[in-house]
Image (cartoon, rainbow, N blue to C red; front, side, top):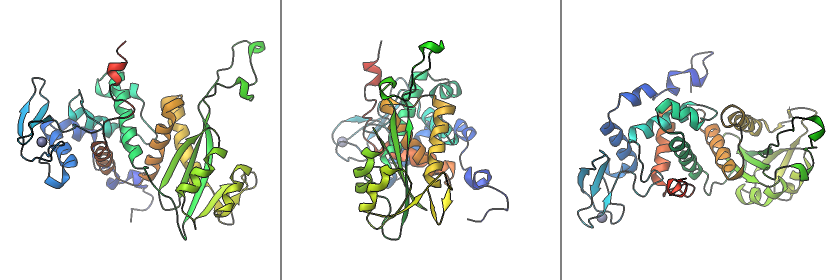
Length: 330
Ligand SMILES: [Zn+2]
């Protein structure tokens, strides 16, 4: 890539191929066409029945205006998003496209409350939508292997979640370093990053619990960089290792974990700046989102929106949020 001197990729024209203004200038039928071309790429946007593979269905609109198809072969009704992560969507597809564009244009993360103000949608609808987008991103990591012969990877871990607020009165305060005084929600996010390659995040109760996972996902022959924490020593039984003592230097004799650090910096900023608390069942999703953003940091925003939409339309209905509204109608 050649860029004018002094211009960062993100400041260049090439990084900006889709603007929110463009999405808002689209009609709903243009947004539908965009989704159809992504979902049914092999038929250039012509709908294919998800049940029997039948082509050329009847087209009609619900009274709400939502576009539906009826298969001529099996008489099943379906929509552009049937059987995908965005199944039974309530909002127009243009709003989905806008939501994804807004989400991708933030480099650290996007809070659902802010998105609901941007788009005039309910907080709950935005919260579920953003989690579905994270679930789509997570597909990218399914079965992913890192490294191999002559490849270099970095491994590191950091704790997230389980914040215990200190009591107001000093005498009431507890020592939060003791396990008994913690909330039990504190978890270790472990990242494996291949230099000039992909990332793979996971969440464990402790860094030590990550060892067998690392060995199953990082190929033999990889040169593994880690800090000098004793928890990683065990990895030397499978990999050649380079260790860096951060109290001496951040990078020494080719050993460093700077890319892993930069991942944690992004995740930490997403936590502090956007979400305030990332813990419990969603921590993995936030960890995957930040890893996805790291890997795509030099991809233009239009391509990022396309890729996330493609992942969502290739994924089955949400495991995290199927029937979320029905279950939570308080
Ligand atoms: Zn059919």
